[in-house]
Amino acid sequence: MIDPFGRHITYLRLSVTDRCDFRCQYCMAENMQFLPKSDVLSLEELEILCTAFIARGVKKIRLTGGEPLVRKNIMSLVNNLGRYLQDGILDELTLTTNGSQLEKYADDLYRAGIRRINVSLDTLDEAKFRHITRWGQIDKVLRGIQAAQEVGLSIKINMVALKGLNDDEIDSMLGWCVRNGMDLTLIETMPLGEIDVNRHDQYLSLQDVRDELSANWQLTESEYRTGGPARYLAVGETGRKLGLITPMSHNFCDSCNRLRVTCTGELYMCLGHDDNIDLRKVLRNHQGDRQAVEKAILEALTRKPERHYFTIDPENNRPTLERHMSMTGG
Ligand code: SAM
Ligand code: SF4
Image (cartoon, rainbow, N blue to C red; front, side, top):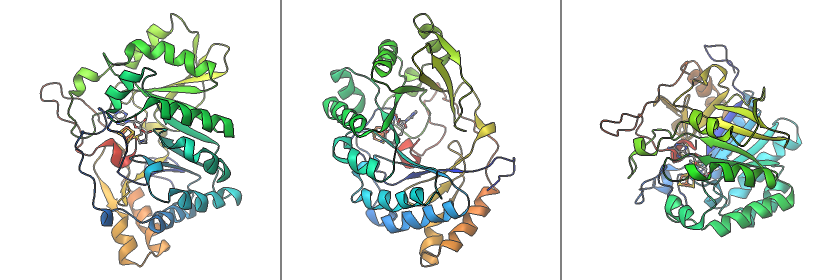
């Protein structure tokens, strides 16, 4: 798949549920209203979608959410997609998780062919963790990370940089990741969806963070790219990488290689635009016919925009987009 700007699309991020067992402040309101179950695609429908994308050249699939590991029977989808890895049709299957269910699933994920996962962890401080996630328990997450490492999964930690909340911990988080053999990616907050806190108050520029980290760490530009918004720095002699996702301060769209599908089957051509195509309608109107889905995907591709235009409006604290990150999974 090649879009109108010549970009090759090989990466699908698929949200498998809008539900979550946490309520991270920057992601959801505490009293989030979740979708009726009938609106959410069944695991079979999600699989048909994946096969349509794979047939059109997608080589990497990331499952996300909401929290992908709270979706009932999620392993049946993971195992079925894992077969495409064995056949060499898919290069990578991975997921982004809050880690709460990892202790339970780490082994199964590895057996299904997953080798790398992203775990979101914004702080190592128990009380702060509870404050940021509202409902999360850090010990469970840390046990999950340990279990994942024990079975052989590589882990990248995703940390959202939050002014006044965890900015004093970024240096020590990098140290913790390095000591435990994990990469770290820092993420600037993005203005998606109505939440209960003021985004402008939370926003922290990663350029400033990088300057501060440079006092203690030798950070050098790395050529490593994933076609996504992250830029990577090599961390001294440690062999580890520090990723910086800076949607607000930098443009990463030139090399975009991805499409996103929500758990209701909306195909978003860009995280920063509301334009989408309803693949659930196509699926349900055509009795799950994969070719009809492929046709719709190709049509959607012609509408992939050149770039996003995120802003946080400090005057009225309105998000750029109404949709929450838990719909498209980040
Ligand atoms: N529940 C899983 C997790 O937390 O890893 C997967 C879904 S979560 C929406 C994916 C990523 O998006 C997480 O790393 C989370 O920290 C990040 N995220 C959520 N809302 C965000 C926002 N408004 N700005 C920046 N990152 C956000
Ligand atoms: Fe849940 Fe992930 Fe959103 Fe936190 S960031 S509320 S864990 S979906």
